[in-house]
Image 1 (cartoon, rainbow, N blue to C red):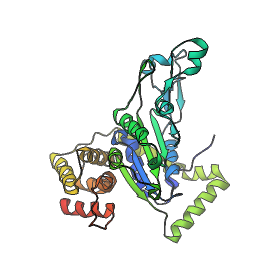
Image 2 (cartoon, rainbow, N blue to C red):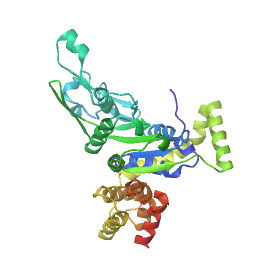
Image 3 (spheres, rainbow, N blue to C red):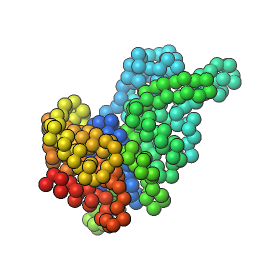
Image 4 (spheres, one colour):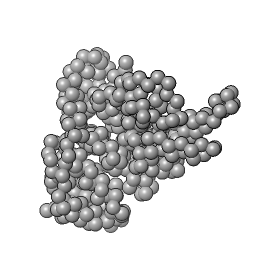
Length: 332
């Protein structure tokens, strides 16, 4: 079995790691968009976090990883309803993927050889209850990205084509990454991602040396390296699982803070407030707190709101700095 690099051993990139932990606690946040330089650990972090989580229990042979037989779609034709453990799925979506490959389509081979109309599930079925990772998301065709974001929001994939009428669950954490030098995402698509992070190569020599040291140790003796970090991995896993069970409350004052922040930032619609609240709740739960405070809002505001800012040609400050400035103004 190939072991991915431990999540807890990733040097720096704290904002990216925090964003991914929050979406692991509450997938309803809407996924993570990570923009930055190549080789900054984007794909490593996705696979590491998925491997850190406990395996899922699913019906053997179920194409959508259902936890129980009554949750399996009828078209799956499950014959042996045994429950097995599988690692949390991480599905890569290649740039050249067609819509049929993503959502599923008519099983042509079965139609030709047996004369039966059957559904061949796509990548969305495989990603259910796991992660769907899109590298270079800014180069993906717009209609595919629209489709993915709609499914990620609803948690259900609906296929109406070629005489088929299929529905199946498609609940996954959507993670997109890209290099801004190769093109930007449309504002409408940016807004549909729950959290956004900008990452860069470390400039501190000590951090860069530590990255080299840990990666070399991992490549030289993988099992020894995994053993060394096993305790920290377990600690993060336990905190995530505990956070999923905490019912975090938010007062009317916190709801008002969310609304005032988004108005001050000029965020269109109400998605900003809802995402900010969910992210703050997830962070509070991860820290073992039962109520959302302004400290939680401060900490997640750059993740939830920086990609929802309207462009201001007269303001040369980066989006993170603008969010911090407005947070200070609104929250004091």
